[in-house]
Image (cartoon, rainbow, N blue to C red):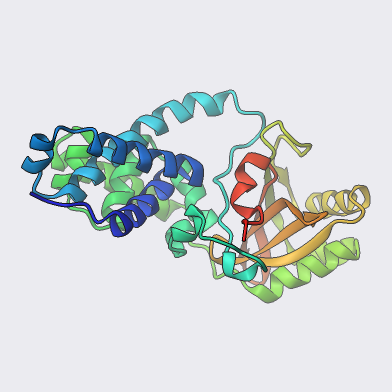
Length: 293
């Protein structure tokens, strides 16, 4: 009979589920659901399962697949653009307190905002096949158990997803010095400096979820983005702008009265910002709230 090593397995499952769903909250719920099903099995049935870890991976993957399917319907009704939930680096914050589920997620290139946004363009089956195989190195025979398809079909799904990733321009490293200059120009409302830091074809996408005010459509073009940022600075006195890691890369966080109200992630190419992803939906900023000590 196999046994479950809760800490090790849960961390691995949470990492997988976040990459599949783009949400810490949904990932935690999916993993908890899988454990509930495991402990709900009759003792005899659990005794028959030689690899509880593989069983939990399969069940979590299926739960995520179902959630991805229903998420497409939900996002059609979502107000404005939908962006993945950003991850903080708790070590950067004073009084971090006890570990949060977000702290268990490993920050690497597969959780960068640019990468997660590409994953959003995939079908649910492509995303599951690609993440499980290319990120976590699961064999296609095991992925077939999750998707209910043949290993050959899963291989084709992963290849299709890989083409989507290749078609997206490989982002350059996000340079902290460029992000710092954006912060300084934003704070001083220096539109000329902002325009100089933004690629002429830059795009800014904001996610407020209809819960807070923000642009509902992407803002395109460096000059338009600079004007928008300066206008926001005018309308938001008392906003504190901080340089903080967002999904493991340099980003900016806006805080008012000690509470994080905006998180911005960047894509940079040739010393200029090409993409900005701004998350303002309060439900997606829960991992950024101060943790009880």
